[in-house]
Length: 214
Image (cartoon, rainbow, N blue to C red; front, side, top):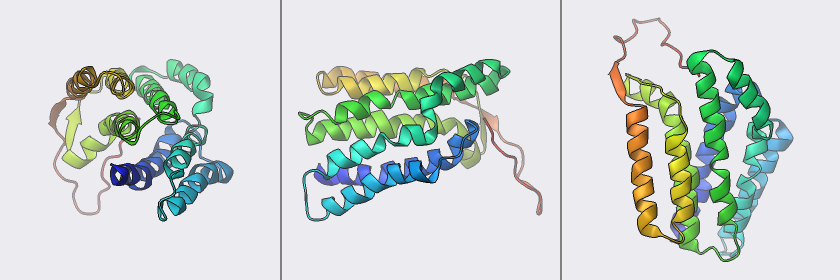
């Protein structure tokens, strides 16, 4: 379990940070500043150094460092971003609102993972379900069409991320109910972003592939 926690903290979570900070932030009209990037990466790097000799504080430090990710992404401006989403037409506004709310839903599991009485197993579930899992679901509508070359129906409602976040929080007190909530989240995501058809033929040589934007 300790190694699973380390893999999540020092491999999976940093990959998510890179994707979000350099792609999603553009949709919010904000590029992360150098000080904010340092605030995100420095605690994680220090925690990784402590993890090598087996110091017990590494997980707490790394999880706390993830909290700096939210202002780096611009989510401290969530009310402004949601107002901007309301002014955008149709799917564009729905997509921005979906991304903002979905990212905010990862905060409760991260805060709970810092509880002094949180066990290693509890932290693993909070990290993998409430942070990594939510990010996978919220990024899927952007990445799947490019990878699988299919069109997805895009009904941007933050129900799947909300269910995953709830499942992660409930896991510590009611594992059976948590499993059902997580399965419901996956089913909701499959229905919400179901494939609608194959994307057109491959681009001819020299032509640029279509861009996917929110």
